[in-house]
Every structure is written in structure tokens, then in C-alpha cells.
Length: 171
Image (cartoon, rainbow, N blue to C red; front, side, top):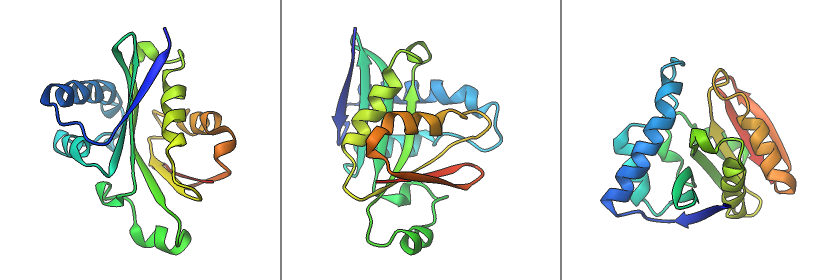
């Protein structure tokens, strides 16, 4: 069966919120056990994203089962590690989009779920913008390659600007 990706601005249903939190926590728990810098957000912040209309949520499903979850926002305040002065200096007058989460169920990896999820997210990007995400180079080496592949002609350039690792794409 094919992957269906739904975009949501606000997810208010408590059972859906809990389902998404459990999915997110299950994906990131083993990663957080292997890296000294946490790769996920506390539940409080995660639940705040779900009800924040400035955070675009994307839910991928296969056969009505949760296959992936991604989000992006122009509200850089959701990530305290991002430096607003850096983006104001280097990308003035360009919309900055931050991708705080891209998670795919283990059984869906290599089956197109993450690619379809990321493609749906990139279709919603503003013109002439910048996309930034953070990831562990130790545990997520393939994430920049995934953005390269799924981004296709949409992404025009990138640079690694930090070792934690912070990647910036522009179009």
C-alpha cells in the first residue's frame, strides 16, 4: 500500500497527541541512549508544537498505521540552540524554516515513508527560504543525504555549519 501524508496545523485530539508522542518517544529513545546530546524534545514542548499553528505537522500513514511524523516552523524560538542573530546576519530578508523532527517507524524505513514525508514537507516551503535542522552525526549520518535526495531540484545549496550537526539548505 502507498504512503499518504497529511498536513495539519493544529492537533487538538488528546488521543492523537498521545499516539504521536508515543511514536516520537519510541523512535528517539534508543538514539538518546547512544548520544550524550539529546536528539529529542521533552513531552511538554512536543505537545505545545501539536497545538501551535506556526508549526506545520506532517503525518505519514501506510494502511492507516502511523509510518512517520515530521514538522517545520518559522518560529525559531522552539529551538534554544538556534541563534537568531546568526540567521539575521547571514540570511536577511529570507524566511527561515526549522525542522525540529523527522521520524519514521523502524518497519517503514527503506520503504519510501521518509522520502514521501520529506517531499510533502518540502512542497510547503516558502519561496527563497532557508531550512535548518540539527542532528547527531554519530547516529544519523544519512540525514543530510536524505535531504539531498528528497529535495531534488527544490534545494539549491547547503553547508554544514556546526559539528553537532547543523545543516542549512536554501532554495
